[in-house]
Length: 342
Image (cartoon, rainbow, N blue to C red; front, side):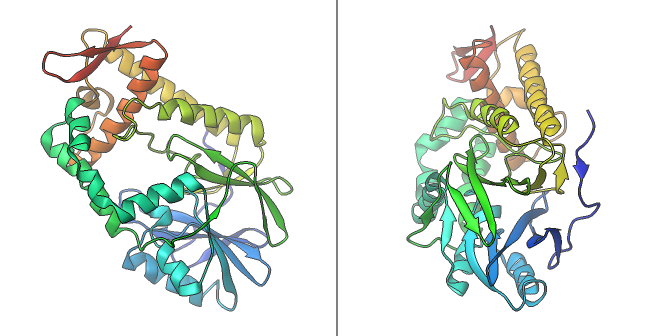
């Protein structure tokens, strides 16, 4: 299948914007990761701009915000902050922006509360229950320790959250300036990620639920060890195909704006099915744990942090396959949880 049709050959430089539709600007903020940017959007809102997502809460991001405020956003106020989900590259600088400009925060309740929990009780991520989850699924102590430090990394990437917010739920309609946006939510990558769709102009802001070149991370975490985030994610993609037209202009959380939504959704669904089949085939000769499946699926060397992400995503596929009867769980004599092909 072909790649999506990109609306712009190049993204905006940090501190600059591209007008992707009248009164809708696309900007970028830097990230200190292999995925080195996050997209943010500015929607004309009366005499100001409504902001969609905040970036990570570090000095590099604040420096780019200053360039935006002195440059393409100069002369008009910020009216509100809409945060699509609780991952630090989207919510990290929210507290700083809200305090500086007195902005109201629009967010879904699940995403707000999850972010608030990690800011108010980060020590909960160090509980032995969390460590046992990773060890019982075969992850080594070094990788387990690396995964469990993510909570502290999250704290360092956050500038706080206000004690109150404006709850947004699926089915709501947000009026921003002269536009009406339908609110959709999707799970899998995040629990209740907000997406916005302007039907009148076929403008779709899916955050990280639909990306043009990669699939977002879909992982199982200790708080829901038997959960089915992959099943939830795939249901969301199929629902989007039934709801949003193929020729919508898609403004994702990462990568370039594009059209060709339905084909992109089909590619993402097929990718996860291929990974599922790879896992099933890998477990035909003998049952394997999520950790033992990492080199079966990922054929390049991974550091401890990368191994943790790969492990959590593979476990999401294993849980999905077990729920659908394509794999059978097996408890090994060593206490490690494994699964075999059905």
